[in-house]
Image 1 (tube, helix red, strand yellow):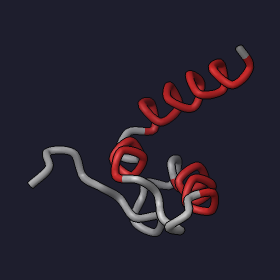
Image 2 (tube, helix red, strand yellow):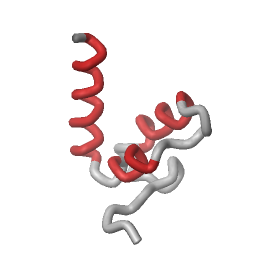
Image 3 (cartoon, helix red, strand yellow):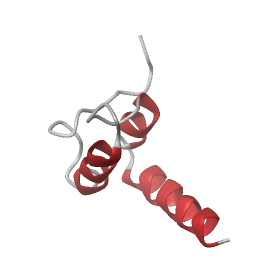
Length: 59
């Protein structure tokens, strides 16, 4: 059992739901990877990850 909950799009915190929906739409399986679903537990972690991803795309 994981110590960090893995959220579904519907069960994610309100602040994380829009990004998780976007990730699920771009996923070949139609759902987020476990790592993304676990990051949804903390909006601060999700925001940091999104910021890092945006910087790596620009670089």
